[in-house]
Picture (tube, rainbow, N blue to C red):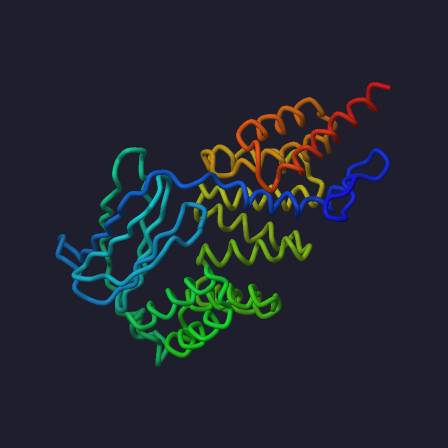
Length: 333
């Protein structure tokens, strides 16, 4: 049986490595549609509740690390509109202050959230040891990064390259700039350049979760499973509820044919993703087939088909269902 020219099995044995990446594409395509939009207001303060009046870049990401948007603080406030229900992290970078972040949830029908973040000044020792010429986060830099991301979303690679070039000139020591640069290079097909850019970002900020996730995904696709697993485990130490990290880890284990671990990671991703990652059920099915638990594999596929009766992963789901039934018949003979 073929999926875009790739055999799903040879004889009676599934070619696990061949379809793991196809299932990964299904994982990305099966995110649930956004729920009703809400507003998130981030309020910055310094010490004793005093309003923050300086320059800061505020970023909003899903709990799994996906960047939703970024903006500069105006009178200590940043507003994000059109945000769906779910778990999020707000990150704040401001010159002269320690990086700050806060996790929060937007509940259904809540209308949004107001998130208070208190900034702590950098210790004097940190200030004295800062590298000379370290860039100041500015509204212009934020503007260039936002334009880069918008161009990527519009599939305008040339425009994205122009704006990320400006951002690199403005913030050469900013890990966020190198993270976005890696996204541009990856879109252009320069995977070696993307990896180098993401490694540069992590050299500047070893705990930059979006970069860790993107680099892990690239390493997984290139078959460097041990390195991918190491990065993903580091993400989970920093953010234990990252459904995206668990999802990617499930693919790593699936490609390594570590089926019990793949099942555990996929199950965790499904529980944390709360309906956003139904494609993980196909990964569960593939892992169950690897363990010869064909009934569980069929149940996983059928559950997926009930919630996703149409869409790009449909053929893959049906093929997995046929594979589970085929293997069950062989096992009964």
